[in-house]
Image 1 (cartoon, helix red, strand yellow):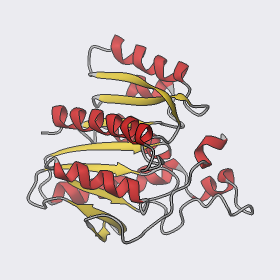
Image 2 (image 1 turned 120 degrees about the vertical axis):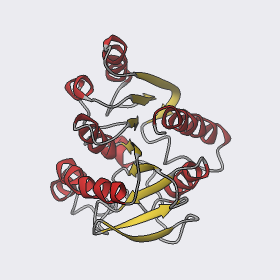
Image 3 (image 1 turned 90 degrees about the vertical axis):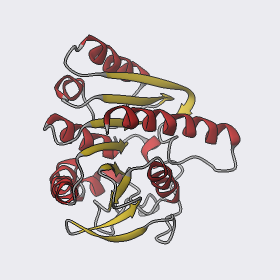
Image 4 (image 1 turned 30 degrees about the vertical axis):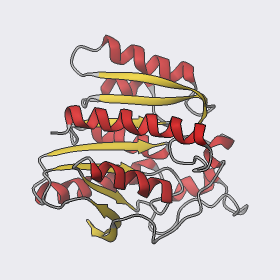
Amino acid sequence: MSGPQCCTNPPTLDPNSGAGHVEKLAGLDTYIVGSPASNRAILLVSDVFGFEAPNLRKLADKVAGAGFYVVVPDFFYKDPYVPENVDRPLLVWLKDHGVDKGFEDAKPVIEALRSKGISALGAAGFCWGAKVVVELGKCGLIEAAVFLHPSLVTVDDVKEIKAPLAVLGAEIDNISPPELVEQFGEILAARTDVDGYAKIFPKVEHGWTLRYNPEDAEAVKSAEEAHENMLEWFAKYVK
């Protein structure tokens, strides 16, 4: 997780981006978009740059457009990682924002969604967020999981997850390299109790699904392909 790719192309955060709104959910500021009448919800767990990243909110809006109620909580309590802050490098920041804390904070979010009438729930995690999502999946709290350029996720995690899992990895990734993603795929292919697959996207780097340049057509195309794969997985299992 300490590799430089976690810190490249940081987004320009915008608290006003997206078509949704921010409200409290289980005590956390949460970007919410989609019909509250839907009984299907998707939890998006951000990378270290947090829930105000415009591309993340744009993706949340897209998922909502497919008929889901979408929530993107601020698991960092207004304290996302800032690469320019040389006094607080990533490993120091992570001490304040460990994935174990994210997992504990996610559980009441899920409880709140269930209390609203959500009967089917999927979760997608980006980088840091993938480790939170795998823990939710290991506890049986979600109906489907997607990892996008995960970090911190282990082979044992994938062996233990109880939710159908899609792993979307990058060819150029020193955090979850293709060899590891391939291992994830082999484990999922061998399991008979849960569906899953792993896919490696060529010529893209860690972070490509969120930290792409909207003016780079090839980058947008690769990101959107991953987004569509995620939506297809949720359409299959969150219903």
